[in-house]
Image (tube, rainbow over all chains, first blue to last red; front, side, top):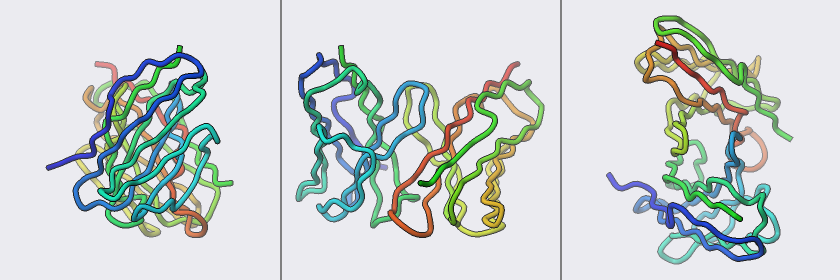
Length: 113
Length: 112
């Protein structure tokens, strides 16, 4: 069965650079969620989209923005990267706004040097 | 602000033993989820608990939910090495936004 696809899987950037993470949800899933997980920490909700509109917002820094496109894939854009942005970024998708029924992607590991 | 706490944070146990992980949360909710995460890997859904008194079992793991006490438990029976992982509970509140708030996680190590 198709799963959530994230790209890239690994990314190394320097401070103050920008990064774009991509998420391709499971086919027919219309809701996408983004999470950030620092080393040894629990995942923190960043933002979610339902039917291409932002539906909920969590602890997402102003330097980050995200959107969901017409094909339901989503991109998380991160600017002015800081060392503290180094983390595992997960995307999850669900059919409808059902946060408990979401399937997580493999994650993108971002390292900021 | 919703707080979700797990204990213990770290658990080292021998194979064959039983143990329970506890998840407490601070707001009204009857939607609680358990996930497993291996190091550097994604989150795997284990259990979905959607009502007071819900009990789910899969293999050596059993999860339950007491919404009045705002408490969920994950019980491990006769632990085996393959169960070594970090376990997270996550809650969606009954009122407010529709997002998962994760617990602090319990890192479980099963010793042969």
